[in-house]
Length: 213
Image 1 (tube, rainbow, N blue to C red):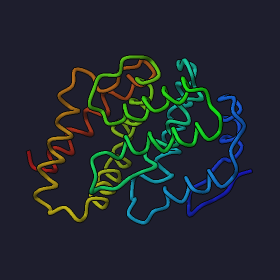
Image 2: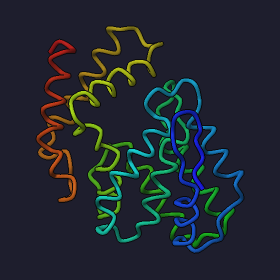
Image 3: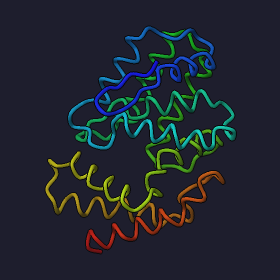
C-alpha cells in the first residue's frame, strides 16, 4: 500500500518490488520505517523524502539505461540517509548504512559493493566511470535543471539547512559550489538527462547573479 509520512507519499509496493529484483527477501517493515524516520529529521528542508521521491521519478525516465536498475534504486533510497550539515562524510556514512542493510538481508557481496559505490558517487567529486554511476549522479543533480520556481525553492531549502552558517560564509561557499557545476564541460553525462543541461545552466547563472558574483 501507500503510506503518507508528513506530506510525502511512500509507495511500499515499490520498495518491495525493488527488493524482489535485488533477490534477497524484503527486510522487515522496520527497515523502511527507520529509513523514513531519518528523512523526517527536522533539520532537513531539502534532503528529505520529497527529494528521494523526486529522484525516483527522475530515474523512472531513464531506468531502461541502467545495467542494474534495482541497485540504482536502492542507492537512491539510501544516498542521503545520513545528513548532518556539520559533517563532510555524509555520503560515505549513508553508503555504509546501505551496505549494512544489504548484508543483513543476504545480498550478494558484488551487489553491496556496487550500491556502496553508487552512493559515494553522489559526493560529485569525480567523473562517473560507468553507466549506473552516471545515472545516479545525473538523478541527484536533476534538481539543477528543474523549472525556475522549483530551483529557487531548492536554493532556499539549502540555505535553511545551513542556517547555522554565517550569511557571508555561506554565500562564498555556495558561489564556489554552483560555479563548479557551471564550469563543467557538461553537467549531465547521460543522454537521458542531457535535455536538462540548458535549464540547469540558466538556473545556475541566475543563482550566481543573485548571490552577487
